Image 1 (cartoon, rainbow, N blue to C red):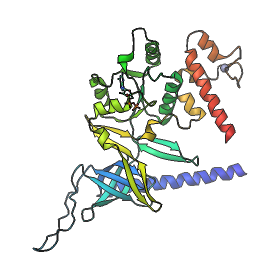
Image 2 (cartoon, rainbow, N blue to C red; image 1 turned 135 degrees about the vertical axis):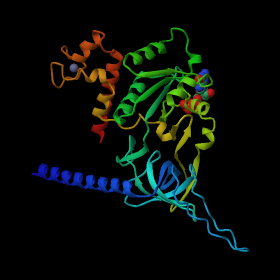
Image 3 (tube, protein in one colour; image 1 turned 45 degrees about the vertical axis):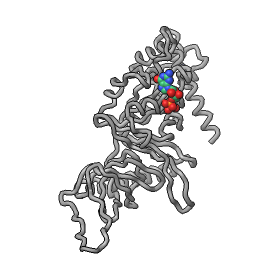
Image 4 (cartoon, helix red, strand yellow; image 1 turned 180 degrees about the horizontal axis):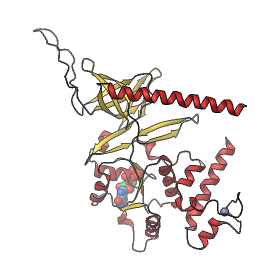
Length: 352
Ligand code: GDP
Ligand code: ZN
């Protein structure tokens, strides 16, 4: 009984969500509002960049001689406006494409609708609620290096996070100047290539043309351990990035405090970077069992072929995963990494 009621509610909720989406879509089709891109958000404040201009520009008021010049902000392509959102909208994040209206008199704008998202990075907040962090990221660049030494299981973890967000990953082995001939890290590179992952080798102050070309047309986020050279790479590709990503003071009811904003910076050929200290930690966020399976396609294919349905894949003789690992069909290291992540999730669930 309880189950049935729960399902009905869910259906009702779904219908409501569909209706909301439909009316939102109609809003999008009929409104003459401007197109915009959320380029920064911190706290409740958002900044929107104008991607279109009105057909008829509002006219600047005529100033009579001797009267003070009123404030007036022309609506120019690419100009950035501080905006509020209509209260009926869901939480917006950096990277969102929106419809909005500008008020040249105040220099402020209001966001009226949000375009469907191609992707959404979310993270759990302190209260285990899912919080959106960045929208429309199309490529995640996972940077690693031989120093600080890379833990392959950490790369696997990032790959799991990318797969579960349904965003392609690009692996970048940076600090190639530190890599010697026959360096074991090159074996790791080969392993990921063989698994079908895209991988580039770089040196932060070297020639980054290939990387820059790969990023053309993409909205990217750089992730990876601290010290691997993310900032250095970003600063070489986007020379003014350092000045553009900064900490902002925000006035709130609780007084002034500093928040680190998530910033979108356009660069190169139609590319954009979405960056914040939080986003760089993407991959270390909460995972669930399905996420983990998505990040290990070669292991996922073998699940269900073990002798026992509840196989732990640790000591069973007729275990399809262990057999595949000893036959060299999958990497023992990847299996270990997979089992470790599964254990970690089980532990976390016990704690909650
Ligand atoms: P982040 O924490 O990932 O942003 O890393 P940083 O960009 O701050 O770089 C960490 C340290 O590694 C700094 O001392 C950089 O100068 C150094 N570094 C960055 N890229 C390279 C590289 O390609 N080769 C070498 N040898 N050092 C690098
Ligand atoms: Zn098994």
